[in-house]
Image 1: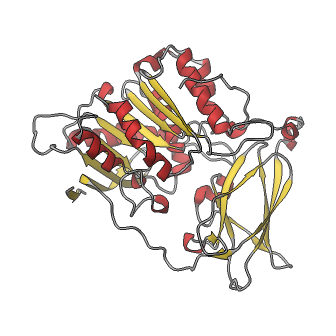
Image 2: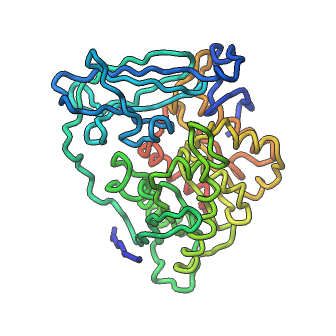
Image 3: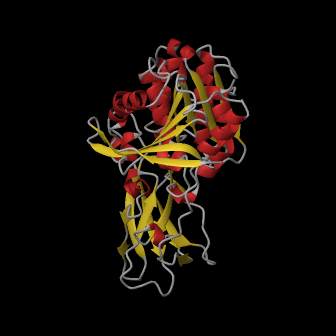
Length: 415
């Protein structure tokens, strides 16, 4: 397979509507809180570090909420206590589920297992005031972790320092061109725009070294004649990812606020650049938007905000609980006729989160089922107009999404 890198300047079982913040079911402890001023629980973290930890080591928590830095390695600094442990407290809305790890300020100093291996994300549910005690088995060596070699496959063009007037920042775009693009100068191609662009093509730039393998899947499916040849645009994220991928106004302590500006960036700035530079078919029926996690949330939001632009949409493990299940609420209460003009893919793994007390499934799965139920309610036909895939024991990471990228491309662009 040749490599070219060009530098260019389901049917839902039921409609589940009983969740609170972040799409989590409200617990009995939370439900008893009637005073608005007390509508928060206090989580106290206490971390015991391994013997031999340098005396000047700073300790942080990094996780998937703004209070923990949105996976910034220096998310929340812990204070050294008199007994040698590290600790701090935060307040969270009742029912909030949090994934996190302990770091020494960089990912080269992240916590490890006793044998030095990777460990799963830590997890908590803010169901009541509590103290979370953690004992760190070992630290990473502090040496820069080896990054995989580049894994770009096919004809991929790179646009660096693409400036956004809407966001007042810049980022990189990667553009995958299908086999035969240069040999058929009169042909125009559908386009799929994807968020978290550094994660979809290349292990060398991807978070944690795992990529979606979108380029390999597209090359294979096009060569086999299973999907039509398409252009795929990977839009890099940046330090404002959490704000840019959450629609609506900012929510105090939980981020957001730039989702609409990001959507305008894609529609008003990225898409015109791609249409002017490459032989695209700009029709809405040929234009798709896709992403995972918060990228899935903003993709669904953009499909509704710009139905004249996007005719296909994939919400992969979408974070439908943020903020306060707003997208599900809006889509359930508003006009749903627009949905019939768009082809939707949604999916969720049953291991993406843990069930709250009294629930048999994580709220992420219940939220995804709710969205599938909304599609049915709007008259969409499962398997034709939308597909909902529930993956048994599926996890929330790039490797899991790579396992189903073939199915996603086949549903959106299959022949």
